[in-house]
Amino acid sequence: MVDGDGESVGTVAPVGPDPVGPSPEKQNQRREMERLAKEVKDKAARRIGIVAAVVVLALAFVAIGGLPWYTIDQGERGVLTTFGKTSTEPLQPGLGFKWPIIQAVHVYPVRVQVHSAPASSASKDLQLVDTTIAVNYHFEPTDVVKIYGKLSSDYEAVIIDPNVQDAVKNATAQFTAPELIQQRPNVEAVISGRLKQELGNYYIVVDGVRIVNFAFSKQFEDSIEAANTAKQQFLQAQTQKQISQVQADMVVINATAKARELELQGNALKQNPDVATIKFIEKWNGVLPVYSAGGSGLIPFLNVAGA
Image (cartoon, rainbow, N blue to C red; front, top):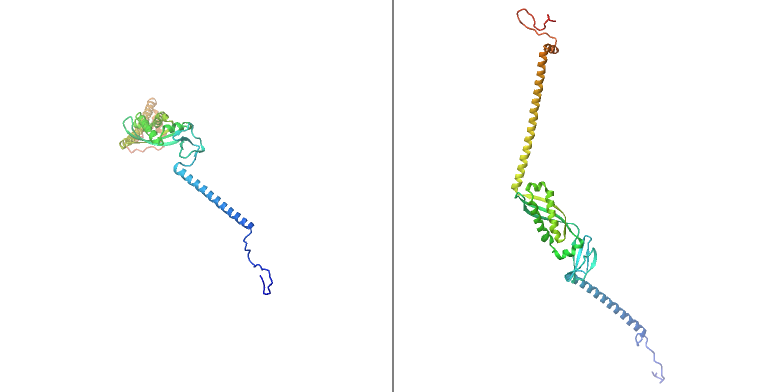
């Protein structure tokens, strides 16, 4: 610049922010912070995406083929199937893994199970009998693969119940209706033997059979009650007869004893006539009887002259 005298003067810089902008160092720091923030954001997004994918995949497994793991309790054994083909060995208790959709696990109990089954049949004397049977059974752990191949899932209704019906009919036909009640253990033994033989063909081990109840027709129950009443009355009559007989025997015994006593007394009097006088004196109280009579006034009591 030139002042009014024609001399040149220096230019004064304005006071304020630097017109050139931030330094390269600050710009680098800003860019680095932006990069780091974006990287953190991208990582968080990827993690959320992975978690969401895992959740969706797990839900898909549950909806379609179940979880990829399974558990078998101590009282169970399992059968693993791959596309329907069974494994050669049973699955043991514990945690295991399987491929969803491709593989499946079928679990069977090996503890003793109790199954109740009704059965209708007829006795040897053609009385209708409704029976309820409780069957205790179990599977052998080593047979579960064979069981899966031979039995359906509803084996109790398909296998056990029909065989119970058949075994009960076979057993009750060997006993009359009263014998079914009086010989229940024998009936249970016959049923148990038949079931062990038949259910053994299906790898079902029968541990025991118990008859829960016998139900007969109303007419038969009434006849049983009448027979019991008549039996009680007969026993009462027999008892009364025995009592009467004992009483009659006592009368005879007493009469015989009395007759014998009189006989002995009579024989004694015959052998010794003074016995009667002695007995009279033993019972006399010392008072002489008074008679009112005319005549000599003698008292014919003691033979004074003989004394």
